[in-house]
Image 1 (cartoon, rainbow, N blue to C red):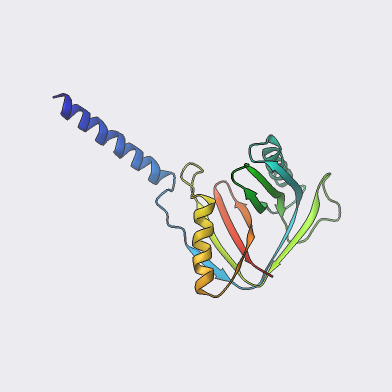
Image 2: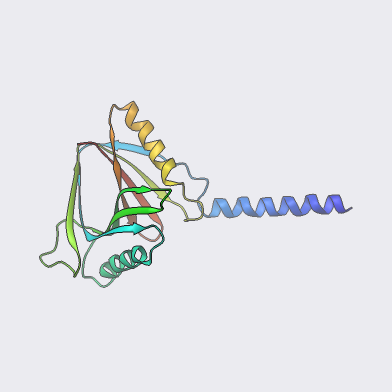
Length: 174
C-alpha cells in the first residue's frame, strides 16, 4: 500500500511540474534567424561590476520608468560586453533602444551605437525560471553563424519587448 501511495504521489508531482514547465514556456524551441545589416542606438548607462549588485536592477528599472512616463520611447535594451563567470563580474550598457537619440539625455545617460553586417537573433518568450542559459543561446547562434560563414563577436544585445518577450541579437565581428 505504501509503495502505491509513493508512486501515485510521485506521478502527481511530476505531472504538476511538467504542466507548470509548459505553462511558463519551457517547452518552446529556440529558433535562430540570420539577417543582414542592422544598427542599434541605445541611450543608457554603463555598469561594470558584480553580477548581483543592486545597481544592475536600478539601471533596468530606471530605463523602464523612462519609457513608462514617456520621457523616452523604445524598449529596454542591454548590451552585454562579456563576463567573467568565475568572478561573477559583468560589463553591461543598460538603457533604451531608440530610433533616434533625444536632444536632451536623462541624467547619467549617454548614447551608444552598434552596427553589424550580419546579425543572428532569436525571440524568447518564457518565464525567467525556464529561460535557456545564455551559454545555450550563444551556442545555438554560433552553430547557425558557422553554417553561414559568419564569425560572431562576444557581445550581445538583449531587447526586452513587452512584459515577457526577449529578443537576443549576436553581432558579427567587424
